[in-house]
Length: 305
Image 1: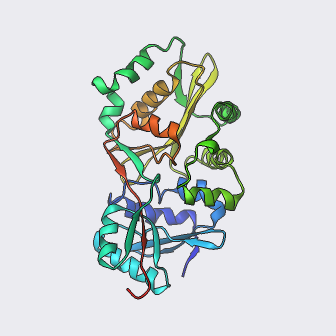
Image 2: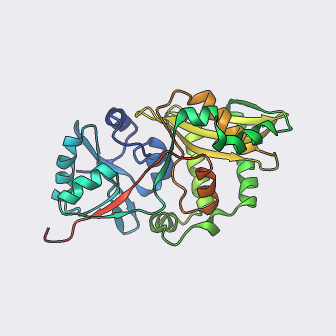
Image 3: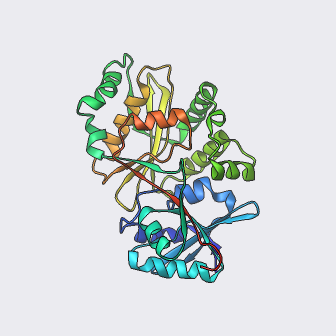
């Protein structure tokens, strides 16, 4: 039976994630508690697999089970089907193939794939394709310093978030196919900005509990950027939050480069999450030349199969 997700569950979650069978962020504390706490995430925890569900109004969402061995995935799906579940979301490519064999219809979840990058490439920025990024960094005509986040930095981060919001209203760029994200917003009756600020505040209030690292980019004592990320149990580095004051030329390139170099230079890969169908985010993430995508699929088993 499902029960509410508890912080101690992440010991087993991380043990299964350490197998490296997924590169996405579905099972991180930042996703499940930072972003989705109000959706009442609940779990079934066993040694072989973990099941997750959360509520979107009258809809119950079942993300694909977490396993440490591929051979345990069928047992996890058996457990879901025994509960009457025939619709599984956030399915990875290898899981999709197994579900096809079980009679599921597979549909790619457009806009939900996460961007995966080569660590050495992002840390070094070598080569012609990163010429523009290097130019941005070299042309920065202001003093800057990246340092660890302190609790007294919070007000400066919030102020920066509102400055960023005034320059780019994200809700105007959400694409029509982004059904799940729109449903989450409607369920919580929050804007994208409010959801992000709420999640960010939760993470910053307990960095150790969320297993996250936060850093501030400052210039002459002023916060001009910040980044928050995590070294995932799989060995990859994920960048959850990254905002900067674009009044400073090349500030995003500076922030991104310094943060990844300082904290994730030996990560197996870098995950910059999905673009949510937002054109500006898509262009930005593509400009760093992802090597692949952590794709997600929806699997539905028609009745009678």
